[in-house]
Amino acid sequence: MEIVEDPKINFKDTEKAFAHKSDRELRRTYFLFKLMNNPTFVKVASFLGNIAARIPFHLGDPLIKETIFKQFCGGTSLLECQKIINKLYSQKALTILDYGVEAKESDEDFQKTLEENIKAIEFAYSNPNVPVISTKLTGYVPFHVLEKKQAGQALSDFDVHALEKLEERFKQLCNKAHELGVGIFIDAEESWIQKPIDELVEKYMPIFNKEKAILYNTYQMYRKGTLQYLKECHAQASEKGFILGAKIVRGAYMEKERKRAIEKNIEDPIQENKEATDNQYNEAIKFCLQNIDKVCLCNASHNWKSTELQIQYMEEYKISKDNPNANFCQLMGMSDNLTFNLANSGYIVAKYVPYGPVKDVIPYLTRRAQENSSITGDMSRELGLLHTEMKRRGLIK
Image: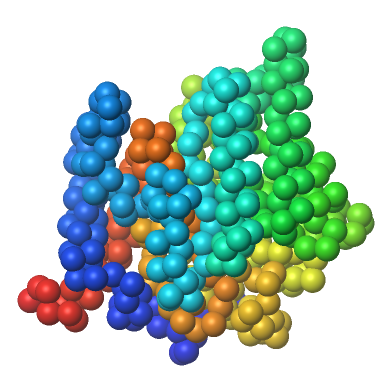
């Protein structure tokens, strides 16, 4: 299908894209993205950022908070996020809250993650601009336990107990979300631990998604076979009479996945090239929209063509812009031209807003910086849009 730009939406409209930024904020963002366009700088800054985050008494926090943290995170707490939530809603965009703490291993940490996410659900319930929270299930169970489970290895008593605790905490989270009508995005993770996560979501989606989508699984389209898996999940939803919650993404672990496949001499789970990923992604969007009555879709992408394609299919299939099953989202700090031009045109779009203590969200921030520096086409486009707006405002010649 040939993609034709919707004449009603101009993703190059920088005035709408950056209307939420003051001149000072725009200058800071432009400067930060210019730095992030240098992979060597990003590597050094990521190393120094991890050191700064470990300085006692949070002495390194101010530097981090005033740079990359402010660009990609909503705050250190839910209350700090309220300013960002209000600012987004003033531009007709919603918020997806993501307690961005990961890579924990103790039961105390797992319990804290659960408590924080239950607080986020309650906070979202009291805030109509926050329809969904997001969580990673590796925040509730040791990584190696999921790895052993998927590999079919013998599980110790500790492992069995850890998996039982994961399911118990997951049920608590789902029950609270269902009670208050708040959605939960379950983030995708590495391919060698993904199956136990999928199985848990598959088990509880029929229970909690009867009337509307509460639970959403995440489908990484850079992995081979994901489109077929999505169709199988839809078939299950049709058979059992529930709504399939589907967040569609390209993926976030490509380099790690390929390196592991080479080291272990196993088949690379990643698509052979970008074109194959794009084709599978766009087919997934089409499939979800063709089955919009049984699928609640979130097109979680920074890709212009995939965004334009959803707009075209919605028009072709006569799906209204405010259909609650046809959603878009982008990460905070990125692709404002997509988010705010979609919002201004009446589509349902949200920003993913991570939050948490500075030292705990450093792994997330490091990934964002490295991801941006490695995707030169996207970075050049972001810089170009920022440069255009700087010129429009007369901030540079």
